Length: 189
Image 1 (cartoon, rainbow, N blue to C red):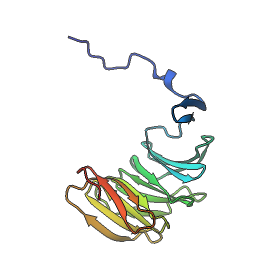
Image 2 (tube, one colour):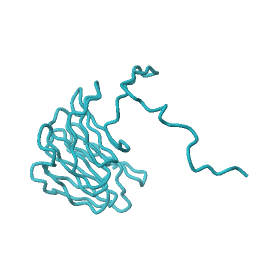
Image 3 (cartoon, rainbow, N blue to C red):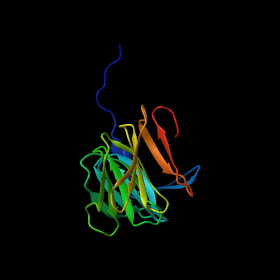
């Protein structure tokens, strides 16, 4: 019989990046920077050509320069882990979804609190997409629903419920009024 081991027998600190490191690989240079979150990074999205936004298990949303790794802004307001982040490209608004069933909109260079809250799901929000013109937001949840929101008013414009539709991801079709959705029932809608 083998021996049960409950702890890792080696030190993981020797594998952690202590500063900006550039590595080369099959796809070119890979840059690593100091961590921006104190827990798991759960989602990342492009914000501008040189900026990205990330969400994490530490309940925060971070905006940083992906080139330098510098943290530019941190948003705190969720009560549980951030599950998704998104933004319309070149927009000044960032959206985050969370296990707290809430979606929040944040303004770059604004206050640290959310500028809009979108509340309407009964379970964790797992899908998030903003329309190309940044006027609508689409959210999906493990509660089998997809909601369409007016970004300015925070009003829910429509709600679709589909049995066994545990939403995993959403994306807006460019140039079309459609949203594509994936779910745990092995389908794309």
